[in-house]
Amino acid sequence: MRKVSFDELMQAVDFMTANQYAFGDEIPEDMEYNGFVISFRDSNQFHQAVVRAADSSGGTYVYYDDNLPMTIQSHGRNYTPRQYFAAYVNDEFNTLHPAAPDPRVYGYVNGKPVYSREEYSYTARGFGPFESDDALLAYAEKATYGWSDAGWHRTFTTYYIDGMDTWTAIKFTPDELKRLKEMQAAARAAEKAADDARLWHKVETVYWADNSVEEIWEDKDGVRKTVMVDGPHGDACY
Picture (cartoon, rainbow, N blue to C red):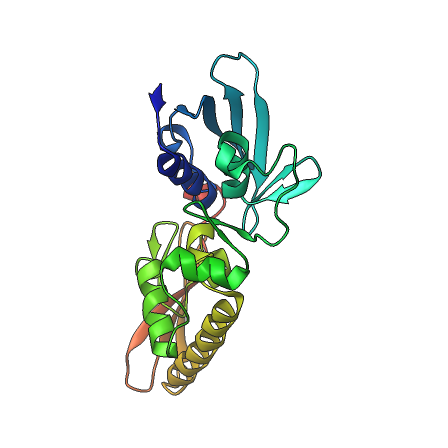
């Protein structure tokens, strides 16, 4: 088992926070830090970890739920994953026992306390407010790897902003996420208006042997598109 630095431990915590559906070899290996062994694991709805002293066979079983930002519940209090693991295994940040956490601290970014949701976002991405909508949109496209969604490449108008992974979403303030949705709604409306202007009309309905149904549509310039209205189903598709 490898002994790790505080930064390496926090990288593992960040990975488990940002990748709530990670499993198997994606899960960080057991690691030792400051006399504690940390074992991460996955389980359906929750990420879990066991934290124990290196010379002990028993440990503390913890889980954190799928919220934004993710939280760990312990002794009636809620912590960000960074707060919890820093407090539990690092004397420098020992805010769990016996003293209560500093109520002013919103969370930790690379071990640094931040005091508001906005400050968390600015610190996480490394700079402050965006100077324009164009700058916000360009950064969002870069942060989502070209509007990628669970491995699928989408466009700005088809991307699901509320489905953005946790560690990406936390880099935007609530107002910035709201503005992205406003710009997306406007872009979708413009896209629809342009499509409506093509004056599509249905020219044919095709019924396939696998029970699927497709419609053939044609615009004012004679360009055609196919729309599936019912997918393959029934015995014929097996």
